[in-house]
Image (tube, rainbow over all chains, first blue to last red; front, side):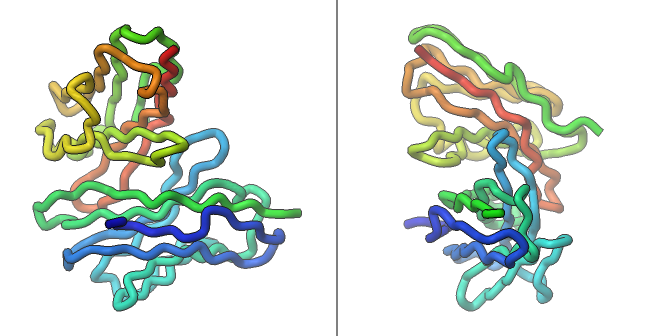
Length: 118
Length: 113
């Protein structure tokens, strides 16, 4: 079974609009972390935002925010006021057993290719 | 501060040759991960280390793949013998236990002819 599911293979969004990238996850651990990474065409993996399973507030980093709905096991990324430079692949990832001494590997979703249209 | 450093950035080799990819994690990080990225399979975790000890190598595809971490500042991923299906971008990443965030290197693009 997929641990991380990103249902949107590709999205086209008009510049300056907000965009939501979907991510659902599956885990039985109580302590875990959720991450979003950006991969531009140059290939590097850029960390965007992190949400811990015990964090009560949704994480925010500049124009990025994470809409964390624990009961629904979703961790959607919201980008406000999109820019042309936001065009990239976006990966949702989960790290289970975070800081509890279990198997802490980071599992990635299949990604969403976001294209910002001028 | 230096990030995760990988070498070589690009490698082109012929089937059957040995390939060694190298990684220097961020100083002070106690986790090191090797990932492989292909169009067909996305990002796959191959192996990860905690304090230089391999914890989970269930993602290593075959016995042709091996990884070592002889000290806290160096790791290698070796493929012997290489095959065309090993062509991919191999990423090394490191993290600190408490924060959880992985810092990635720029990747090593391997092409096996």
